[in-house]
Length: 227
Image 1 (cartoon, rainbow, N blue to C red):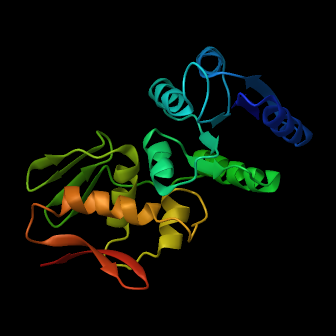
Image 2 (tube, rainbow, N blue to C red):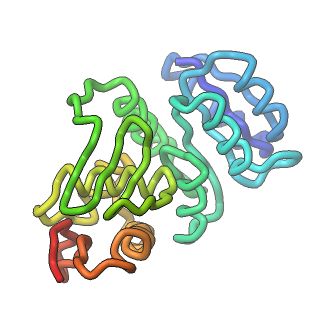
């Protein structure tokens, strides 16, 4: 693959580049956000790996701008910022995965394979419109409405809702949600999945009598109509 690394710490950039080249990949490095943006927009890359704290343009800003110009480009963020809020912000910016420094290079390879498998894998054809009770999700326009009221969701919230609707009336564990929605292994030390579930509840259920998103204590979550 052709991979772009945007990392201002030369030692880390060099080590990751060397490791990826040993795997047979072609790697380019940018040491600041603006240079990374310029390279990403001017050339064709199969994957972007970027730090978050960068000079001139942050990794989150870079991620958002690349996501608008190249919506299908896989993006992995590398950062020392590992709190739940940091991860949520990274996913909301459009990242496909998030790896906290310091990390084992073998874990990076696993994350790369997971992200790429999702991008090039065979996808089961899904209906253009998903409906459950009075909730409707249009896959083509990426819009959501309930009882005719438009609901604005972030890309990750939309993806989580879509998976829950596709698997309605079935208990979904946090591990399954992490693997199917985020293509990552669930870290029991963080609660970012619970954070996103709460985001969805506030938007999908708060103003309605019938609740759709429910917690099954010790098991996970279920999407089903209940008062």
